[in-house]
Length: 246
Image 1 (spheres, rainbow, N blue to C red):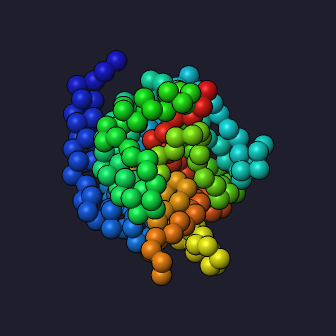
Image 2: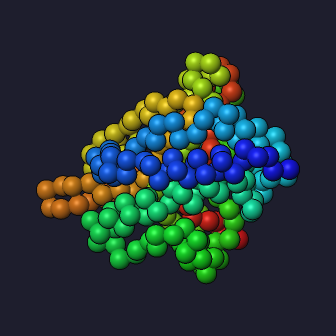
Image 3: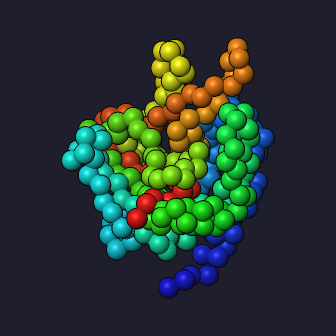
């Protein structure tokens, strides 16, 4: 049943996404391959989203990481239709990120251009046989971790993705930091730990990003993972903007 407060919550989320300092986000992504949206969701919204994890009927697939050598912990991919908050975030964040993605492709000499409306990009995915929803929830317990990886699901890959921390460090869990690595040519791999609080989100490169070198821009490969959780439970939401192949 829809409550009277839900439409306001959805509108609030859309306003928050539109109110982001996109100039700052663009600058941070250009400089380091990631940027943080502080307080994107409220505590109530985070707890409501985390509570969806136990509702198995909302998901198309559950993955136990240890079975595949991905680490320890598990995650589930939503099926369509997405939960309203997830859908709103995906739709509202995409336009600002599409502008950045197009600028990155300019720098790298890539001819692909991303439409400024998410539905138009999803139509492109569907034409290539990418029909499956990719937004997901992840659950970690004590001792769990996620190995470094990239989320690539088909021919059409949107180059940026968003992770939202739904639990509070120190209160709900300890450890479990988000890790990002970057490999530039023959240089040693650079690693970053991204500090987040409950409701914060981080946007980062899915696969590669442009970095300025002596001869113009080159491609730096990015990967992400999660360090070992020492205690408690940690929930996160992943917003991936391309869909997966059927």
